[in-house]
Image (cartoon, rainbow, N blue to C red):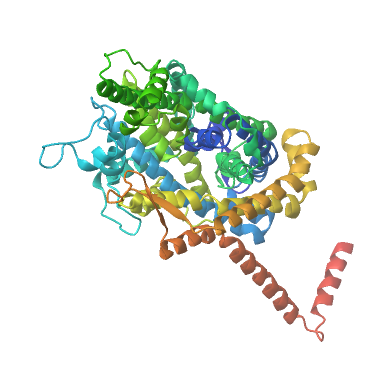
Length: 619
């Protein structure tokens, strides 16, 4: 991207080519949520039926917002703060709010990449370290915590996180996670060391490699036993679920967060485009590819989860078969998985008391498929458990964690750009300080802040940040973005901007979405989200070996001081919006009153100057 283009007083960097720009936008939009959040929502909300509210939200909320950001960034050729200051100084706080959210999301997002690195390094071992329980301290048996749960759970909660029983018990820094976190931030810095120039090269790999891995997984996953069960379960529509308003709320929030709008990164990326560029086509392309990736990723993910459920189901039946065979002295191989139901019905009718005394497990494939998992539960527990059973498990684990790292890294580029560009817009750093040093300082500050996530309670804090930083603040920012562009800059001016860039004015669909539909949907989602959250005190699942029902997670309410932090995480990022608005408004009023105070009714200087100007014009 070494070319620059003069756009006013300062030269602005420019993309090497259109592909580089599109890959960067797609890489920023397509992230970990496409792989571990969307399939989960499909699973719990009626399979294929969830696609209806999802696609409606995509068409009327997601893509119009994406188009608006790409268009205004490309036209004004500034980052988020510059854009909103240019539209109106009263809106300057919108850009600052985007910068704060990008920073806060970046610090916990890169912690997930640190966990991915930890698993990636351990994927080279044979056997997998999460395939069996470690010995206890006396070396006379297996570790009790591991025996009560599973080797996969033990490796995640104890070996990786060394988790505390609740968020109030901080624990100490886990040195292995600190090293992984430092490594993750070093990778981000190396890719960003030359700004857009080096990032534009890295994105060729980080944005395309996940698709290669997903395709490899797709080919392998659909050939696994039980894969069909997973896919049938995922896409079997349950139309009744659409009557639940929570489905529509989750669909709207998923598409909104999935496209990475309101972070400021997309505005910054589009500002490096040539002024004459079809941003409408770019927005539709990025939006469609992002959603298609979510659907594409769901197929291998749920094929593998179907394989896992099938294995658990068969194991359950085998345990029951063994119990029946031993108790009734039936010859081996007489009862099989295929004829188990027939044998069970016969024995239960003939010897009901004896069968009841065996306390056989109820084996239901759908029940095992019902055990929905998302986020870290999918990546570090469900998937790693399934990989153990797959031939060549090391190769699949290595590929999977490289894919997750690539997905996360390309999203991190947008978060970092959403911080660095506003810093340049605000001219907070003297020009003699090189950009490489500024990037290094930002990465160092982020690393030091993220050390809270390497404590024993770190996973709980990641969940807090993940649930609340990227929710209400982004919805509020997006609402102000639409108001700023459509109602303050003006629809007429914005239409002329688009005509200048693309050669055609926006059609009635875009106009209707920007004027009414999108802001209305955003406002409804925002209000509904706040109402849903306000109705209950937030709770969180804990990993507590002392819990009576362990290994089930113990659900606890957040302590009051953590609840206060949650409120701050929702409020503080958007505080700059009213603060800057009031400050600029006060400055305007003060300036106006000062000008009025300086006027003297007994002085004719103003008239004399005006007369002189008229005389010069006449001359």
